[in-house]
Length: 371
Ligand SMILES: Cc1cc2nc3c(=O)[nH]c(=O)nc-3n(C[C@H](O)[C@H](O)[C@H](O)COP(=O)(O)OP(=O)(O)OC[C@H]3O[C@@H](n4cnc5c(N)ncnc54)[C@H](O)[C@@H]3O)c2cc1C
Image (cartoon, rainbow, N blue to C red):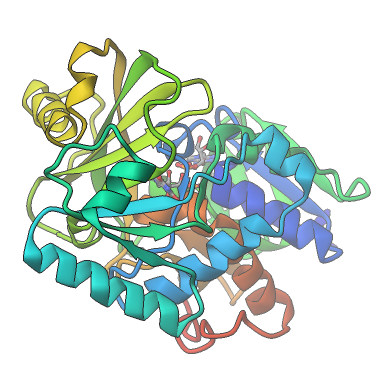
């Protein structure tokens, strides 16, 4: 008899959300984390909860993801510094204005509230934006969070004692009902969920995940500079470019008054060392749209690595690991949307493991086994 019902490997935002969801469903869960809860890609990202329409299925997934955050408890929202900034997409050419229009129609078709803004309206809602931004699309339901805190909060929910966290447990191998840690500890359970981000490919050889690195900059405190999370409309397409480095304007006002400036996409890069050229390009793109940042001090620059699947959507379902006997599962490969989609990913996993209906619009997209 297994010691518990489920092992979840990885305490990032995705693993923590899955562990809580399975425990809420009544399972006894052991969450195994090698280092710090919320310390992987989760700590390196922007924490923007954003509705996106980049690849087929993404709009349905992110719409459910943002909605799930909105319905979360006040306690999680407080702890994760949930702030309903909304998103402001901006265009700087006629072709980009058309893209914004198309995005508005796609959002409207699935009942996502979004409104076009003229240059004058844009200037009224975000006076710091330069005239390079000639139109906008405002999505008021989007928000921002501090993702590491969210992961820690989710992992702390004991769910009546059913969710236990084991820190310092770096899993080196998994099987259908066990996980072996590097320090010799062996954990047993009826089912095993691999949710450790890019490292999932080490535990599940054959899982098609690749790295896509990103740089972020953060400034000193300049409260009141921005109200919305602001992105250029080309950002959505840049998130699915597989073979070239891209740099887009993607800027967030933190509740502290700091400005978080992103973001780059560097396919296949996994090391942490900063690239001075990319930092310069990010700063130049930010100044193009926010010239007032010229006088701002950048306090810190860092990099993080996104895990990317071939479809561009996360891999959620049964893993086809040899010998897994259908009892090993995977939730990984969330690219730049893992914070947005962590809660809905957990709901999908729970439905697949324990039965129950998948969130509407996601049945077909996530019908297959994972890999
Ligand atoms: C620059 C950048 C900007 C981003 N911006 C956003 C954004 O604005 N909005 C958004 O939604 N998403 C964003 N993302 C993406 C988001 O951060 C990720 O999709 C998400 O954090 C992935 O979570 P995860 O839990 O799958 O992986 P991780 O956060 O990497 O967590 C994996 C965990 O597993 C642990 N682990 C690894 N190997 C093992 C092992 N063998 N045994 C036990 N534990 C192990 C790690 O220590 C880690 O804690 C961004 C990412 C980057 C890099």
